[in-house]
Length: 430
Ligand code: ATP
Ligand code: MG
Image (spheres, rainbow, N blue to C red):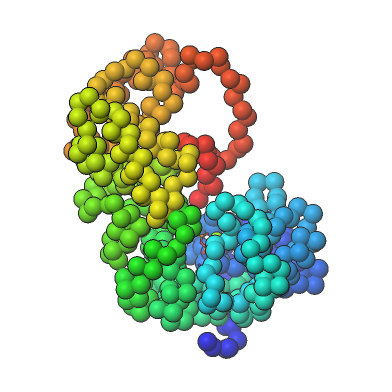
């Protein structure tokens, strides 16, 4: 790949008001300690597009240990690639050491799925992965993600015409797309995610490489695909991402049980996007419930008789969730949610209000019933019946969201300020 020096733009007119003061503090401190440091990746891209970055990443020639030594509030995370998180009150800045691309390695993402922080490779191999700033730029995935911004001198470094692609709203891999997608097939999903989020089109060569290589995604670990699933669908651009995925035959690869009739999935994605826009809690379990629902229905209809229906439905639920999790992992806490939401559909259909309104998953099951009604699979009058049941209950002075009182009331744990997903996971704001 080219060794040409980066194009430098002095005073690139970034909106300084949305720049994180903490990120600038980190860059400044590293510079003062004698290291090289820049803002890099998604935050620079988003600033140039006039969007507010979700978070700020810093790249430096300091090793993770040196970063840790420079900040008392830094801790090292990541398995294969150690990175430092410098913690501030409401934000942490991710600081990664320049590294070179290694075709033998796939990029495991910046933070591991299970938060496991041990190294698999040992120190020596990790040292070999570090590189210069130039190497760091070339190992990044897309041209628009390889811009380095120095907030002190207000200079932008552009190694691969990222600025041009930002102004053309084009997503293009750095280097040959076939090679880059083969090196790390997750970049295919990243391409879809960025195109959906930024409303970019693909450069022709990049687009041409996607469908033929999509099958390589089956070799990616289910836990990494779960991470990617969340980034694709839980950030407010799920419907757009899903459309693009269809263009490349990706749904069939990630969700092998999925059949092309996907109206319930679309309805669930749309509701997720809307809830995020309204700042309501969301959980990916709801999406899995929708993705696997048609197959679950088919299987339980096949095996169930009137006498064993509940058992057979439970077995079918286990089987379907288990099979889906072979491709995209479904953490245990989410499987409980999915099973409850499915199971409660039968109770909602029977209009047995007793105890139902107090069920901790009632709201989720009701929302699920509503999307089923929206796609013509459940009776809208039934949804209305349950809406009324809640209103009546509300009128009796007991809010429908009140927790069940059958057990002694436990003290509610104090919650941190961040939003929480319905299943209790913390959701980082966009
Ligand atoms: P977002 O706004 O969604 O966080 P991002 O571009 O910051 O977008 P991250 O996943 O946070 O995406 O990654 C940070 C940067 O690390 C990217 O901009 C890119 O330069 C690099 N990167 C991340 N994953 C890969 C990968 N699989 N291959 C190559 N480069 C990657
Ligand atoms: Mg990022």
